[in-house]
Length: 108
Image 1 (cartoon, one colour):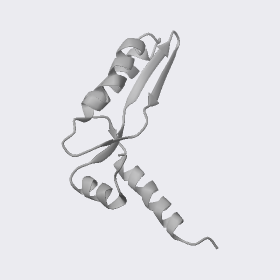
Image 2 (cartoon, rainbow, N blue to C red):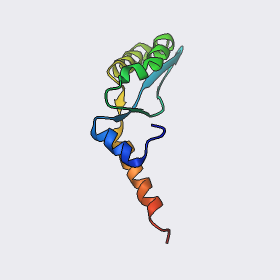
Image 3 (spheres, rainbow, N blue to C red):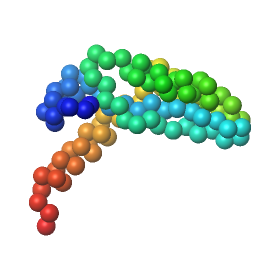
Image 4 (cartoon, rainbow, N blue to C red):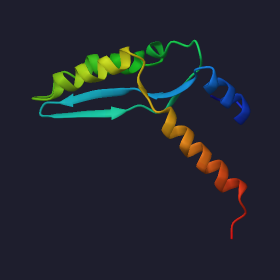
């Protein structure tokens, strides 16, 4: 998203751009941790699954080993990532709008 102005971002979003996170799973014997990645901006036409490949690999290597929830959490993370991640565009747009309004308004 680096280098995009606010108006450029709006155009990209109107053309199908979106913000996504990729869950990844790490297990240590009896503990399984399912965590989100940082937020990524996926431009129109970009393959989100390729952006999430790093998290697929982490999950494949480290997710299965937790008992009892490692395998189920691993499958959940893999399914989400292979389908392009979790779309968080509405939430990010709301936060960006709030930030823009706060910075544009003079403080009382």
